[in-house]
Image 1 (spheres, helix red, strand yellow):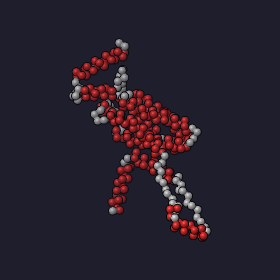
Image 2 (spheres, rainbow, N blue to C red):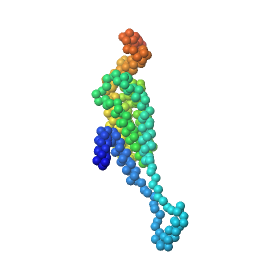
Image 3 (cartoon, rainbow, N blue to C red):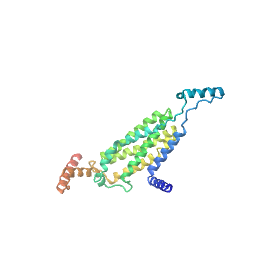
Image 4 (cartoon, helix red, strand yellow):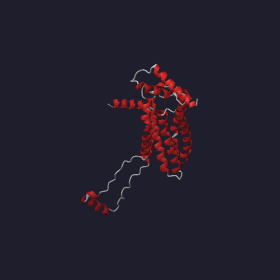
Length: 280
C-alpha cells in the first residue's frame, strides 16, 4: 500500500510539472499561504496562578461550574488577496463568450492565416487565469501597504485593467486587428509605467506582475503578426471580417456551398462600396 501511494504521488508530481502554469500558480499560492500562517498570532493564554491556595480555589471553581473554563479557539481565515484575485478573474471572463464564439471550430478564426508562434487555443485560459489571479494579489498588497501614493497608483491600475478587458471584444468581436494592436501596445506602455510605482510601495507586488508583462509583450508581437498576415483593404475589411461574412452567408443559404454567383454578387457590392468610399 505504501508503494502504491508513493507511485500515486510521483504520478501527480509528473502531471503537475507538465503544466507550468498550474505549477507556478500552486507555488505562488503556497508561498502566500505560508506568509499568512507565519504572520498568525495565537491568542494569549490566561496567566498562571502561583499561589497554592488560589490553585485550590480555581480547581474547585472549575469543578463547580465547568462552563466558565477558558478555551482557546483557532479560527481559519481566508487571505484578503483571495477576494481581489477572484474579482480580477471574474472581470477577465467578461470577454470569454466573445472569444469562444470567435474561436469555435469551423469559425472565422480557423479560416484565417495565423502566425507560427500562435499557441494552441487551450493555452490562453489557464495563462490568463493565473495572470488575473496575480493581479489581484498585487492590488491587495498595494491596498494593505496604505502608502500615500496607493490611491493614485490604484487609479492608474484600474484604468489599465479596463483597457485590458476591452481588447478581447475589439480583436475577437469586431475583428479590428490593428486597433487591437494599438490597445495591446498601450497596455505594455502603461504597465511599464505602473510597475516602478508598485515597486516603490511594495516590491513583491511589482515582481508578481513580471509574468504579466512578459506575456503581454508576447501577445503584442502576436497581434502585430496577425495584422501583417491579415491586412485590411481600402475600406478597412480584413480577412477575418471577410471569412466571418462568408460564414454568415453560408448559414443564410441553408448551410449550402457559397456559389460563384453569390461571390460575383458580393464582389459587385464590394466594388460599389469601394467606389463610394473613394468618392468616385
